[in-house]
Image (cartoon, rainbow, N blue to C red; front, side, top):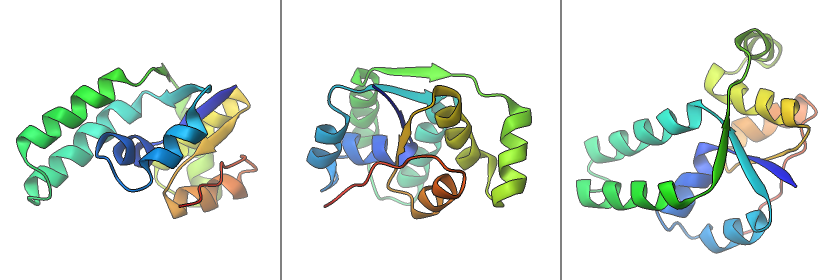
Length: 132
């Protein structure tokens, strides 16, 4: 089973957020896939956390080590499809990449991002329900 994972899921796992055990349970046995943008979004999110003093450099480095352990198959998504999803759902390209990726792979999306969840459902993408 393929499952598109977004940035919010990866960050929750690598930063040991309270939802980590549930997320690991929900993704066990799935082949995780993501658009190439995930890699840069992780870097951007960690840099923002460092800048805001939410985490230290040492914590960011540890999170990156944990991130590198997660087997994720990265996919290139067509920009023309992305722009279409952006226009249809009035979302940013970074969210549209995940929707297009799920559509390409004919699989579900797992996210903690409410806006992405709403847009994915509107785009008729199945979303994995996460219960805390």
